[in-house]
Image (cartoon, rainbow, N blue to C red):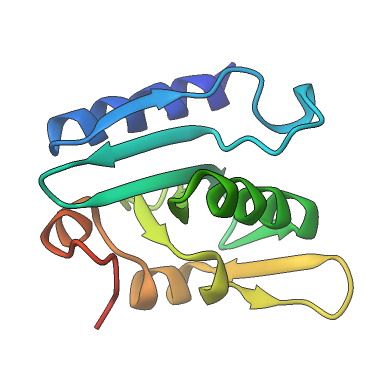
Length: 137
């Protein structure tokens, strides 16, 4: 249940930074409907997010096409921004947020996200909450 613990920890972090946030039980493979791990929104920031939570102990995170497609489908239908929350465990890195279109597409299986790319392109919770449009620029 470590994935559940990570999701709960991220929900608490989002609340501390002004979001209303909740875990979406039965996300992922437990339902045929596309459903993110977390929904979060802040009226003050004008920001609503569908968040897929990913963690790894490796230096590269791999994400399936299906996972990204379901996140995008839900976000479009719900009218919010899709976002991945990523944590590279054991590397003293906090949660970082990255848009699905910033992942590197692999020729066949899915997407990859090296730790270095996440550090360069990903947003911390502090930069996300300073930046209502969730852009990196």
